[in-house]
Amino acid sequence: MIFASCAQGSGKLNYIGGDDLNLKQFEITIYNSDYSMGYTLQYVLTEKDLKIIFIGGLEGEDDSTLFRVDIQPNVTLNKISNINLDSLQENYTNRCIEDGSQITVRLKKDSKIKMIHLSNYYQADIGLAIELINSLTPEKYKIWYDKKTLLNDQKNCK
Image 1 (cartoon, rainbow, N blue to C red):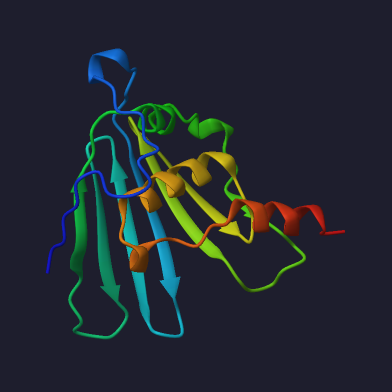
Image 2: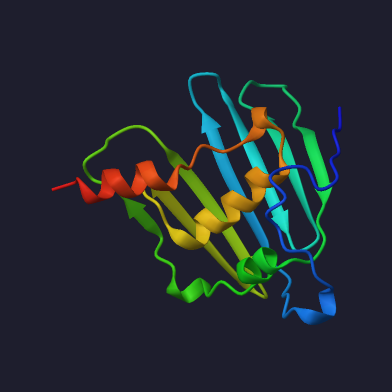
């Protein structure tokens, strides 16, 4: 089953012509797993579209595309396409929280690939990508990545 949406969400995106942007080709894949239920939702964001894929953890279970939407060039997408992969660490962890939000991100630009794991930690570049994804997706597919809560938890970690 494929669901499609046109400009769904908060409407916060600033759509402008592609010629006005320095939009570079990229691919960001976010793996949001529910280990207790045995599945992963894979979010694949490029400069052109967003796909959400269900990856079942059971033997013989097929992966399936749950949602797909084309994306028009916009300021947020431009910022994401210009993330400097070399400036990103491989792990961001709030050592005071053992469980909770665990997100793995694969970023690909040009010939570079960077894997990043976020454990109860707010990282601004990844946060921008998740905010864009959440603005385009139905409620049931949104990724929990609450900036205020995560930053507060990081601040209170002694």
